[in-house]
Image (cartoon, rainbow, N blue to C red; front, top):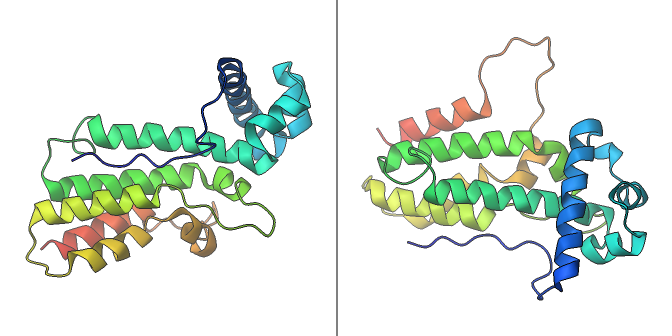
Length: 200
C-alpha cells in the first residue's frame, strides 16, 4: 500500500536556482535553530547569515512562520520515510500491533521534539496547520485492519487514535511536567498502554 506523503510548501515547480537557495536557507535555518532555538530565526537574520537578499527569503518562505513550516515539512517527510521503509517495528515487517505501538511512540517523540517549531508555524490569526495528520490516519487505519481485532468500526476508531497523535491538539492540551516533578510516565508510555489494552 502506498501511503501519502503530506505536501508542504508551494506545489508549483521552482527554478533550479530557487531550489538551491531554498535548500541553502533551510540548512542555515537548521544551524540557527540548533544554536539559538526558534527565537534566533528572523527573516533579516537568516538572509544575512545565508549571504542572500531578504527578498530571496520572502520568495522562498513568505513569512517567518513559513520558515518553520518548511523545516517541519522536511522532518515530516523524513519521518514518514522511516515509517514506510525503515527498520521494524516502526517500518514494515513486524506484527501490526507492534507496528501500531511503535508508530505512536515514535510519533509522540517526534511531536515533543518539535513542539517549539510547531508553535512557531502558527501565523497570527491564521489557521492552525496540521502536521502529518492524514498520513497518521491512513497508517493507523491500515494497521488496525491488518491486526484484525474484531472491531467493526475501524474508521471511527482510526480517527480517534489519530487525534491522539495530532500536533495542534498536543500544543493546546499538553503541559510538560516541571523538571522537579516526579515522573510517572510519558506520552509514549500512555500510547503503548492504550494500544495494549485495546488489543487484548
